Length: 420
Image (cartoon, rainbow, N blue to C red):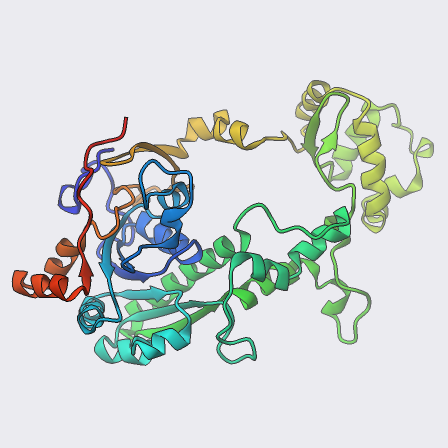
């Protein structure tokens, strides 16, 4: 796809189910931008409001040009960028005018800072009563942690994910993915969509708070409440299957493989292969689903020892023939080059006017009527500022005055030639 302006959008791209929905996106880093990227994929007009310095992820290497880091490029397609200094009176007023005709306003600025700027939910809903005002915070405003700073690593730690890893490995470790940011971003996306559905039926806007800590706590505890699901408790928390030390990719005689022998049918096929078809020849802890679920540590350890007796190729061939769930153990390169992902077209190519050819992971779901799509490349800082303001009814004189004031930062148009 080419990298034209919004008025020259890719004609082949479908409009999407959110075509006509206008979103003011005052988010940065990963959680908020991930949510608004999905909404943009669905067809919404996402106006990314950035500070004069830009989203911090613009600075995350690797990059070809300043302020165009790879993490930024992977999370900000289908958006238009305007750079506003909200500490300037003109910057705040410009944002209010943009929000007056918007459907959604979403931010991940701490509530105290939004209150100082007079950009809280009450301020914006007074300007636009039909607005969906979504706040992505670290912690709910009604609790003692309200207002604290929060980042992915901190929220992972607070919701016990590193501790759970430590129970298995002996050392607490964070997930090597922005787990909290993306899980909370997904929750923000569906909360915004539900609020839009409510507004479509009633005409009412509303304020929504999506807190990271509470959202991730629900995510983790859904697996691990266990005995503390009951009052009084009937046992400790923790889902034993997930915490078994030998639940991991299995070492074979020449590599690793992922497999999950689950049903009795699958276990019986496995037993036949290894010469334990006779139940009497097996440890009784292996002989029924009830016994296996009560003895996960034993079962996974026994299975891991059996897996070392054959090659990866032999196991994959057997699992395929026995219809046992299995997969090779990918690294990042083999994931990117996976033939299934190539066949379904998940990785898409985008032509950028300054960054050249980009590869991005596109929308995963398929739709029969209004599919999501990648219509616009990730914008340069402030690239669409004047266009956005004109769309909102600003005159050329008003735009010039905002630029002179320093409330609107003009885009750097010095390098508009594609990279080699």
